[in-house]
Amino acid sequence: MPAAARTYWLTSPCRIRRKDESLVIERESAGKVHIPVTDVRDIVACAETDINTSVVALLNRHRINVHLLSYYGDYAGSLLTSDTSTSGETVLAQARLAEHPEAALEVARSIVDSAAFNVRRVIDRKLLARPYAVLQKNLESAESSAHLMGIEGTFRRSAWDVLDTKLPDWLQLGGRSRRPPKNAGNAFISYVNGIVYARTLTALRLTPLHTGIAFLHSSMERQRHSLVLDLSEMFKPLFAERLLLRMATRNQIKQHHFDSEANQAMLSESGRKLVVQTVRDELAVTVAHRTLGRPVAYDELLYLDALTLTRRCLEATPYKPFRIWW
Image 1 (tube, rainbow, N blue to C red):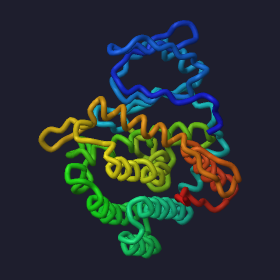
Image 2 (cartoon, one colour):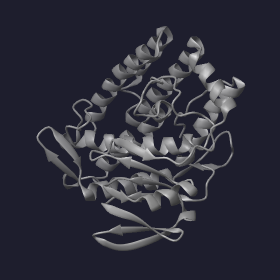
Image 3 (cartoon, rainbow, N blue to C red):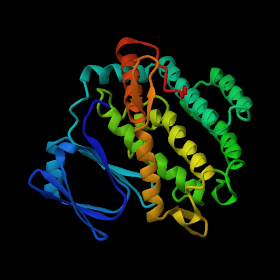
């Protein structure tokens, strides 16, 4: 992303206070940490965070967004600064595209196809070859975004069944569950998906697109940024399922990293810190970009995908969503 500052992650309960032009992070279990605002692009709060109005004023002046995750890791909301990147011309073009049935369906169809491609890529190319072929065939006849989401859901269920065969018993999903997740595997995926959603929101707000005008998910969604839901679909497998498999295989994630009760589970504080650090490190990993001819970090891939959609809205350039190529 075109910003030198970094994302600051809060993984344990804390207070954020202001001292001159610095943020002061106060934790019960540790001392104070002073952070100059020039070093911060945005903040992802993965635990209870106390912020006062003085801090909010400083954050707004320096265009620093705060993304909040809930008790179970779901996206809870954001403190967003005034929108300075959105362009009226782009928003009008985006709205016209979203209102055009055939063109909007084409964008939505490509999102579902690319998301399924990435799921298959990270879980098992061979075992998911047939479900993916069925999905592609069904996409051709889909006549609405609701139909597309149903097709995607069928594929995802097949993918989660295959994923379970590669996980230890205690991490198996047994079907996807949310709010609250019913077991450790679901808790992991929900938590990482919440982070991906927050990072996608940050990426989109660096572009002239409007986060409320979507193509796959309903633009009438009131409590979510619908376009963020669209674009995060392709990136969730890169982080959630892929990292779950890797950490399970390497025995990095253990049962004590979760707090489990009857029919629900969540990451413990130590589990949150481990997962956040893992995702944080992964976002900084670079890969040679085939078009740009330079290394790009995984984090920048979200921004580049949003720019591709921007060009679709303004220039009618075919939208080719992110697909894992390495």
